[in-house]
Image (cartoon, rainbow, N blue to C red):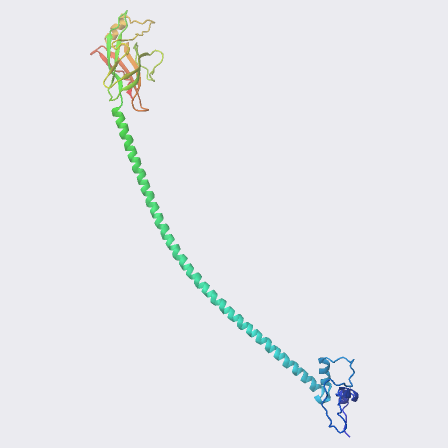
Amino acid sequence: MDEINPQDAKDKPPADERNKNTPAIVSHGVGAPENKTPVRGAETSKPTDKPTPSRYQRFRGWLRKPEHGSLSDRVIAFFTIVIAVAAVMQYVIFSRQLDEMRRAGADTQHLADAAGKQAAAAKAQTEKMAELVGIAKSGADNTRQALKLSGEQVQAAKRSAKAAEDTVRQTYQSMRSVERAWVGPADYELTNNPTTKETAKVRIIFKNTGRTPALDFTAYAIAYFRFGELPKGELPAGGPGYDQLISRAIVFPNATAIADREAERDTVVVKLRQRAITKFLTQEEIDAWGEGHSPYLYIIGHSAYDTVFEGLKGETGFCVIYFPKPKPGFINCGHPQGNYAK
């Protein structure tokens, strides 16, 4: 009698369950051969209300069948399958990762190639820019040199223009100096000697020695006997005490103007001064004057006029003294501000 393994008996399903899982055999009549092929759609003894087992339940039942070996063998087989499935899945995953890495490498290579091309283009552009910068720098240097040369030329032109302007100005001033009017006393005359009852009389003759007329010519003068020398300070230039000899006259070149323009041969009356309040000299003073001693006869005055050149005016100052001896005549009084012409 065969021994029964308790574990196998435990795992073996009951007979009625085996019968339930066995499909029904349909007979085709008496004497007909037995057909063990189940008929599709035929009714079985399996209850219709029992749910269909899941794959896990069927796999678990399969593992419990004794013909599939012991439990340990079935567990080992199970884990072997799991390992195989895991290996397959790992292979699939690694294959996909390898494909991704290959695609990433290809993309990286494409990016590297594109970056290389961009770097080459940037290098070429940089070299082109450097060339353009060199050209621009050379142009800037040339422009700077041109501007410097132009500036030097401008400065030279300015200096030449200034020199020409100075030359023209000097020429114009020289021309004005030559062509302008110059009017001043040309001669003095003592027309009457002093007496105890009469004053001395003098005549001042003005002459234009220039080449153009003098306009608005006006002359002032005083004449008097003075006891002592003239003061060293500024001489009076007109005002009270001066006689207006000529007023607003036109003196043409080489023409003369006498003291009183209204009567050309009239005289200028000079009132003689003395220490006593009198207009006549004493005989003693007249004798001293005749010997060339004090009092001295002075003529002091000035004249002013316009020239034909715009803005250019003329002025003349004069100061003379009369000496009867050794040769009668008028000479410069020697005062620093006595005689001038401008």
